[in-house]
Image 1 (cartoon, chains in turn blue, red):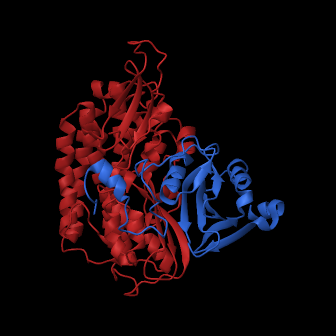
Image 2 (tube, chains in turn yellow, orange):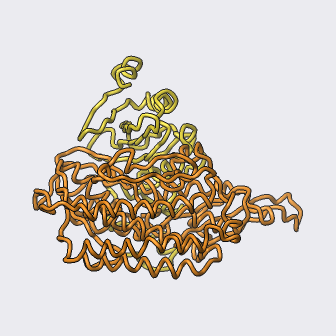
Length: 158
Length: 384
C-alpha cells in the first residue's frame, strides 16, 4: 500500500515504523487527497482518533495526527502532518462523520481550525474562553481569569 | 447573564416570522443536572410535540484537563489519574495506560501479572455492565434491577478492596506488571464469585428479557445501523449490537486474551434491546474468561525489570484496548525525559456520545433517556 502511495505521490509521503506501528508523515498539501484515498481505496473506514502535538521550538509548530483503522484489513495506520501556527487544515467530516467532535476538540485544545467543518467551535471549554490549554505555552495553572470572574462570580478557579 | 457554555446557532432559535403560539417546534433543555443523564451532560432537544427532531450535546462540565496533567507528571505519577476518567471501569483505564507505556519502554509484564490483569479487568467489565444495567433499567422505570446489580457488584468491589485497598479508583496495575502479589485465597474468592454470579445473570434476565414493559421501551428504540456506527467511530457493545463482530480482544489481542476461549456476542437490529442482550451475553463471556484464567495463573514474578526512573526512548505509540464501553486508546509521545511529552486519550464514551443525535431523531422524548442509558457513557471519560 505504502509503495503504491509513494508511487503516485512521490516524496510527499514518508513511511515510518516505530515499535512495530506504521505511520506516515505526509506533506500538508497532500492531506485531503491522502485521507480520501485511504478511506476509499485502502478501506480505512474507521477514523479512530484525531489529535495534535505542539512543538513550540519547530518552525512548523503543530503535528496533527489521524489514527485510522481498517476493519477489512484489521490494520491501523497513523497519518501525520506538520503545520504552521495559525494554519488550518481541511475538515475530514465529509470522509468520516465521526471526525466532527474530534476536530472540535483539536480546535479547542490547540486552536487549529478545520476548514469546511460544519460547526467549528469549542467542545469541552466554554465558548468565550481565551487560550488553548494543550499548547505548550499555556501554563498548567493558567486559566481565563476574566471568564471565571464574570461567569462564575468568583475571584479564581484555583 | 447568558450561558457561556453554548451557542444555539444551528438549532435556529431565531424564527421571529412565526406567529405567536405556533408551537410546532419546541426547544427544550435537559441537564446538566438531570438524574437520567448519568452525570453532567446537557442535551438541547429540538422537538415537534413529543418527537425529537434533533439534539445537541453540551459537554465539558467535568473537564479536568487530564491530558495536560499528564504532561506535567512522570509516567508513574500519571498512572492513578487515568482511573479518574472512566471511574466505573478504572481497572481497564489502568490496563490501557500501563500497556502503552510498556510498549514505549519495550518491556512486557510477566505471565503471572498478565493473568491477574485479565482477571481483574474482566471482573471490571462485569462491574461496569452491572452498573450500566442497574441505572439504565432505573431510567426506564424498572427499579428492582438496580438493587440486584449493586448487591452483586459489591462482591467484585470486595475483591478489589482486598487486593489493592481501593474499590473504585483502584490503581491496580503498575507499569511493568503489578505491585501486589495476589492475597491468600484470591483464586478461591474469584471462583466463589463466579459460582455466585452465574445464576445472578439469569436472575437479571428473568426480570427484564421477556418483561413486556422493558421490551416495549427498548425494542426499535435508538436504532443505529452498522454503517452509521463505523462512520461515527462508535465501538464496543453498541457497534456489536448493530451486527459488527469486532472486539479488540480478538482483532488485535493484547494482555493474554489470545490464550482464552470466548465468543463475541453480536446483535442484529442495533436497537436498545439488542444492546441490552449483547451486554448481558458479554457478562457471561467475561465469566468464561475469568474461569479459564483463574485456574491457570502461572507461577513466577509479577513485575518486569523496569527502571526506577522511567525514561522511555523518544518515540510515539498508539495502543488501545477493549474497555467495557468500546475502544479505549492511548497515544503517548515520549521525548526521552521522565515525563510524557504528550498523552492523548481516545475515550470511547466521547466518540460514542456523538451518535446520540443520530439515534434519537424521530424518537420520543422518553426514548432519549433510554438511548443515553444504552450508550453507557461516563461523563468523567467524555470530558476528561
